[in-house]
Image (cartoon, rainbow, N blue to C red; front, side, top):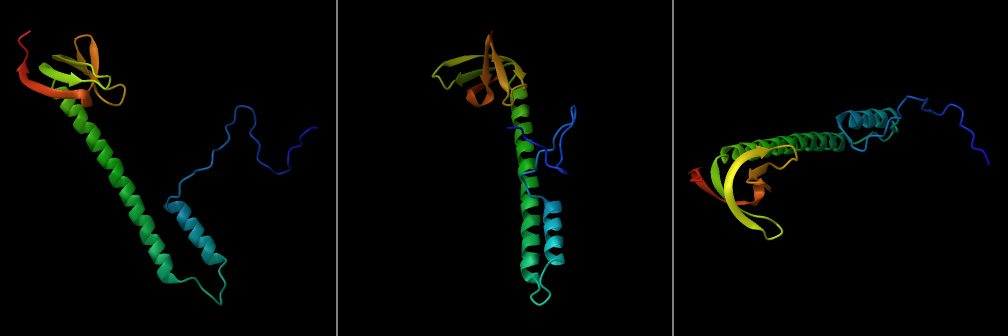
Length: 140
């Protein structure tokens, strides 16, 4: 059985990418839906303007909360990087998830894997596994 293309259906030609549908609703989509709803509403039973304003305010609040969350994540990431950089040259204690405990001088920090990894001797320890810091350079 062969499958025939539907006339008028969008098809990707070689070298062309197919657009993936967006799974989130932003203010542009909301406004398009609102305009469409207003265009096709029954003139004898118009849409409740209070409900329309309520939905608009809720969307605006959701967008601001999303921006605030993104800003908070960025701020937290910057704080982690700053904290990690400040412990270079100090003696630190650590406890890993597998139960390994140790101590040593923090010699460098890597930010490549998301969570800062502190180099202690030949071991890379996640910043959130550091349990103690002795101020000043180590005696070693």
